[in-house]
Structure formats: structure tokens, C-alpha cells
Image (cartoon, rainbow, N blue to C red; front, side, top):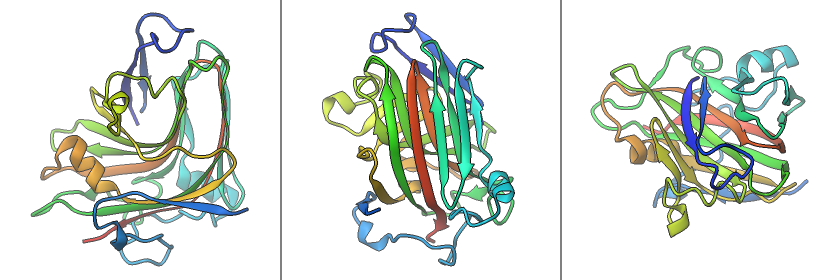
Length: 263
């Protein structure tokens, strides 16, 4: 995965004037976000029709879960500590130093966790509808000064017909430093955190620390809004990402990550 994202530290005091990140890019509350017909969406299960991925419920051995979920980091140095563990759920831990910028990700890639071992066509004679459902618990989300950049999102990579890759990301936790980013419309009451280069980031909610929440939405709607789906577009991956700039600590737990084709 490779992603290029510009962050402007007028909002992040610990960084230079322009920072460029290169990335290889209990009771549960319920949050369902999606289109106007969201009532048609559902919390998915492993046996639901059209399921795309193999291991969404972390039900395999630790070794197999690690293969299927493909945890990795990008942009971080040895000054950061991170790990991804599997124990009936996926837990991402990340602790960064002041000058760090990068991310940790785990989820479903076509090479490891798609049942077909193929990228998924997103446009045939019309856009293909793809739904995502998952549960998440943001256990810890701390910024040292309050100005750091800390995002936790469900993200996906789309390969376009010309071979380029673009990213659509749906944030369910953002630090205050993220919410003042001017490269979207979030400061004007919209739902776009950031739009630039090959990345569009949407705001779909704000997790409450320590609380499990369920999410279910039509992923293809957000992709189409960001990039206008065309013939040849293919879904490469769907994953949870923790992205940081500056000194932060984050722990997020994820379970029941399922992707399905609706038509």
C-alpha cells in the first residue's frame, strides 16, 4: 500500500512548516452510516451472501490471523513502538515520539484475505455496490499536547484503469488537530476531513473511548463520491488504519470486519 498525504502543522506545533507523509499507504453502541436506503444495510456475518473476505471475525489461529490481516506499518522509525495482536479480536497498539509520522494498518487485502484472491471489480455496466460492516473499540487515543494528528479509520485502496491507486478513508476517530484541517469542508460543517492528491477522507463518527460501536455502510457510495467510479476500477483492500503525526498513543480493537457485494 502506498499513500501520499500532506499535513500542514500550522495545526501541529511540533512539526516543520510542511510535512509530507509517504505511506506504502461489554456493551456495544450502534452506529449505522450509509445512503438514504441505509435500512437495507445489515450487520454482516461470515455466511452472508456475497461476502468477499475470508477472516473477518479473527477466528483462525494466531498465525493464520496474522497472514489474513497482514498487519504492517509505514513511515515510522525505531522511535515508535507498535504491534498488532489477535485474540478473538484484532488489537492495534501504536506509541509514537514527537517527530514521528506514519501509520499502522491491518485488514483485508486481495492477495491474502479476499476469497477469490482477485481484486473486486467496482464498475460493470453500472457501479457495483459494496457494503462494509465492522465493530471497533478505541480503547486509548492520547495526544501529548493536543495539537498532534491522530486518525483512526476504515480505509480502502482502489486501483484505477490507468494503474494508479487512490484511497478512500472513513474516520471514526479524529483528534482535535485533525478537525481543524482546511483541506476539506469539516470546518464548514461538511463531512470531508481531507481531499488532496490520491486521498479523500470522510468523517463518519467520533468513537467514545472504551466503548464498542458497530458500523455498517455502503463503501462504494463513498468511493464514488470521492472518485466517480468508472469501468476498470478495482477494490484492492479494506483495512483499519491508525495514522499519526507527533507524540501519540493509540489502542484500537476491531472485530467482525466483513465486506460484501450487494448487487
